[in-house]
Amino acid sequence: MRICHIGLNYKTAPVELRERLAVPEAEIQGILQQQIQHDAIREAALLSTCNRVEMTLVTHDPDAAIALAHEWFAHKAAMPLSEVITHLYAYTTDDAVRHLFAVAAGLDSLVLGEPQILGQVKASYELALEAGTAGHILHRFYQSAFAAAKRARSETSVGRQAVNISSCAVELAKRIFGDLTDKTVLLIGAGEMAELAATHLKANGCTEILVANRTLERARKLALAFEGHALTMGELPQYMDRADIVISGTGASTYVLLPEDVRPAMKKRQGQPMFLVDIAVPRDIDPRIAEIAGVYVYDIDDLQQVVQGNQKSREREAEQAKVLIEEDASVFLVWLKSLESVPLIRGIQQQVEQARLDEMEKAKRYLKGLTDEQQKAVERLSKALMKRFVHPTMQTLKTLPDDIEGDLLMGAASRLFAAEPVHDTKKKDKLRESDEHASG
Image 1 (tube, rainbow, N blue to C red):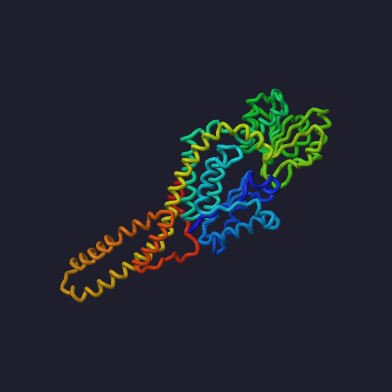
Image 2: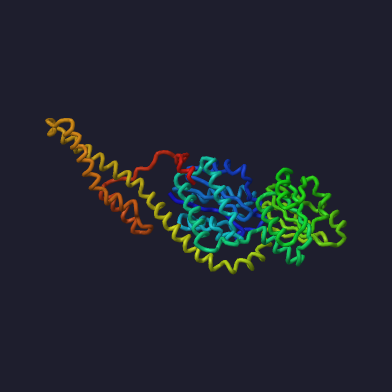
């Protein structure tokens, strides 16, 4: 089995393409279940965030699996494959493992070391479990990635005092206004990113925080925590003119702020600037709003300028974290390599057991005078001898090096024992819906 990782991120694709490919959580399970209907795909998981959309596949045919993933990306984007494929990367096995480990540790994030991505990777794994598309290999893969990320964060400083998208948005606002003291902030959406933004804004002197959300109760909860005021989405027009800073990060599939929502507010503000940051993908704020005089609109890609300045001090820690990631990835790859020999091990075991049974059958003509206990003792002896005989080979096949030597050893073992690999006849792996999953 091989692991393939296909996708795009903020480094390879602009926000206009990423928002086309963004997948609502409610749709992910259905997509995964469709993917494993293909013969080439045994297990599947999908990660969709504002900065990346990536599909992880377990397959016996990497070329076919990657081609199927490419087709899905093109279909989802409603664009010709020739246009989408230039933005996609496709990693197999070693590179795929290292990539996901780095993603989980925040080493591939727009904001180096940002902690939110680990929770997002865990959520993608949980969705694959619920969809029935994560089996033995993905379970081990993701648990190893989580452990590697935890180690990278605990043994280096890459995750300490981490900046995040929300803090970068606040930093950008400070560049526009200079001092944020006494500024009024409007948060559209009441999720984790909005809470982080409110924390940073309050710390920088903002005195009034308005929170608008589709669910008023969530808006009230966040507003209460920061002594702010909760709004329904329908109340936005009557409060827009009060906002100096607007930060929007909802899960809406269409724009929540249009030019006609902002123009009347700007007339009331009489020339006072308004700063809007869109941290959602798909975007919440219609880009045409930037054409209105006095309005400054930034999306998540614009935050890269802020990030580049903030993360230079983190690069040394990131290099140390990469060393740890490499160590943990190597351990997982050894385990994955061992799975390649499982069918051959199964074939040798069957071959040896059949030989033992044949010889026992021949010996029975000479063992007629033995008691039942003696016959059982001979049976145990034959099994013990065969196990002792094949043990060195079994151990070697379970710990094969991940290079040409490993392939040569498999070929030699197959020929010496005259055994053929025995593959699982089931098309899909049975999920580990057991304590092993619960422990993750």
